[in-house]
Image (tube, rainbow, N blue to C red; front, side):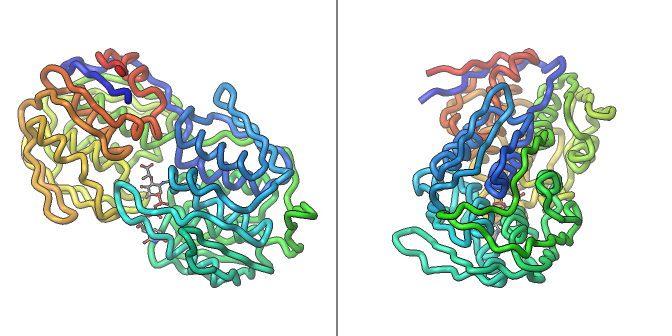
Length: 430
Ligand code: EPZ
């Protein structure tokens, strides 16, 4: 298995263009199943998770290709509504395919996506909404769950929690429902807005994404089925996904933790306002232009008294591990409360191996800044935790080896090349 080798102590400098958003393109790839025409999706990042999603689509009959950051999908001929268990287990985000298949074909069979490294990740909100729309959910048999719906009915769905995946799944199923579906307490992430834009290009009447109430006017036509392949949306559409706000935030924190000066381009600063706000608390200078962000780190980062991770537009949970790394070398004590996932501090024991002083009590982390971290042999246990270890290695004394980088490759496009281009000393080793 390959690993990353980092020699710390180099300030990052220069300019980096940010790739398309993993968490935007994954639901949009699922939404392409709604289209029985051709979907062209631009600004796709080259990530392991994108490849898994394409493999899943191909396994049920889609023709799909990724070339020069552009994905072309022909989902006119779908041959199955059963998703391959091994691929679904690899990437739980594939759960959002359920809504598209249930809507278009009235059935879907999927391996129950287990929890992952950061928590149990239940799908009760997804299934409760499908039931409310008229689907029959058959018990889990041999790890598979089957949903069937002769007809989906537009419904008023109020989410107990603004779940990103549940919001996306309901949006996709509602496209085919008879009548109007409203989702209240919907997730407001920018990736939900991007999905709405894609659906609108398909001809779906939908509004409200980015707010807590989304309205979808479903098609009254009968849905197609596998044998007749009669479909309800057939267009050739082209969509460019939004920039990845978490990748951008990660590189901003890499600049801050190394005392560097860097500019990110092809970003949407508005998607990072909570991250920028907290970065400024550490006396890091941030200059915002239309689609670029310029960062100048202070000689010494100041602590942040309290950060709570929250659904968008609050501070993103996907930036929490990286923030802990940065605050572990800030002056003073910082407190972070992880309100979204129950098991998202698995990177902390690795930071402690580097000399960080961090106490964890349930969902609260108390970080007492130290002057320097020291390089060590580390193991990544999840995607963002792995990115956090990279940031720590960039500022540590000496050499850091990070194993388990297959996690990091799920969400960061050749992280070593991106960081090397900014002056970091980092290599992929076998
Ligand atoms: C999406 O996951 C993202 N993944 C995650 O990013 C992100 O951390 C998360 O949203 C929160 O912002 C993708 O978009 C592919 P949720 P998702 O449903 O949809 C609970 C990354 O690093 N919940 O909003 O799975 C759940 O347990 C990944 O890029 C239920 O209880 O997140 C969690 O505590 C990690 N029942 C909370 O809601 C449900 O039916 C948030 O989950 C669904 C969710």
